[in-house]
Image (tube, rainbow, N blue to C red; front, side, top):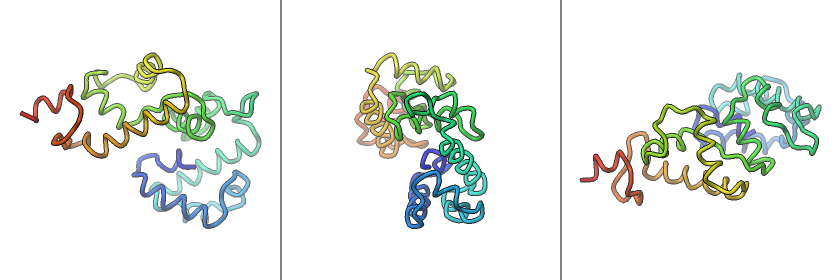
Amino acid sequence: MGAVLTQNTAWTNVETALARLRQEGVRLPRNLLSLSHASLARMVRSSGYFNQKAKKLRSLAARFAARGALGPRGVPTREGLLAEWGVGPETADSILLYAFQVPVFVVDAYTRRIASRIGLIRGAESYDDIQSVFHSALEPSAALFNEYHALIVEHAKAHCRTRPLCAGCPVTRCRHGRLHRA
């Protein structure tokens, strides 16, 4: 649910929505499907675009309840997730990594920003191209990808914001910092 709710919003808003869902006992696809669209939309309102997100959540829940998104080992396939309305690469990969521990690196705006600023990418690369940089450089491990992505998020929040806070930043090879630290 978090992978859908976090689309175009801050995680703090998602946490509020997830807390409301938990409070109402919504943890499984069947729980979510038992709600009306209006009830679900009201519960996820804090995450923004609540009507669309309620529709996406219900659609995914129906697919999981019917086991239609699941592959032969009970794990969804990326292709199956991407075929679902409103699920793009970042959402699909988030579901695979965080819910099913599939070793796939999640590329988000933070990843793109930091990778661009340190010169790992130019900045206009596709999601798949950026992901392949991480897949080719790191051991394919769900735990490693999870931790690596969490560290990227923490660094982006602390220093590498849209308007960076370069003072105290531990990164020494940064295009932005080189221009602004002197």
